[in-house]
Image (cartoon, rainbow, N blue to C red; front, side, top):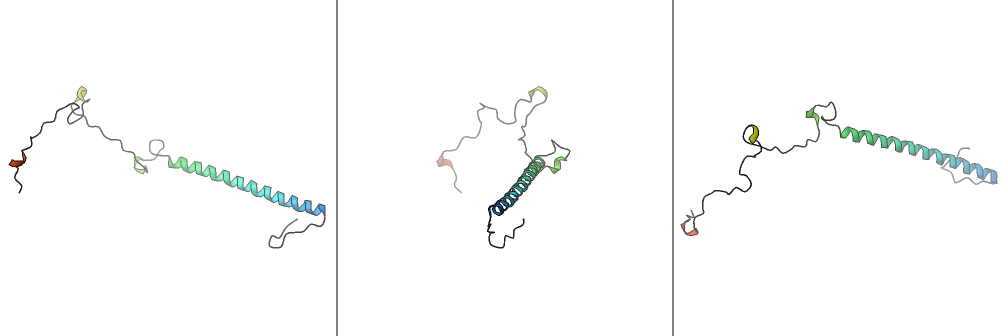
Length: 112
């Protein structure tokens, strides 16, 4: 049984015809639900594939490092000295007292 949904709703005159209409509509609803579930599963798998593709970089695939989209740069620590003394970073160490010029009193400052 086929329905033309542009026309008014069908009016069943007997119980058998009413049951037939219910069965046809139920089957259509079931088919459309199955189609929706199939589309949903396809979209979920596509999203998973795209996420996996987005997470690939040169360290976990055969891609060149220059093709990495987002590069996380690690801060470089500079050490001085050679061999065993490379534990000290360049510059003043913790606890070091700074040495600088003493400020002049305000009366001796030239304001030019």
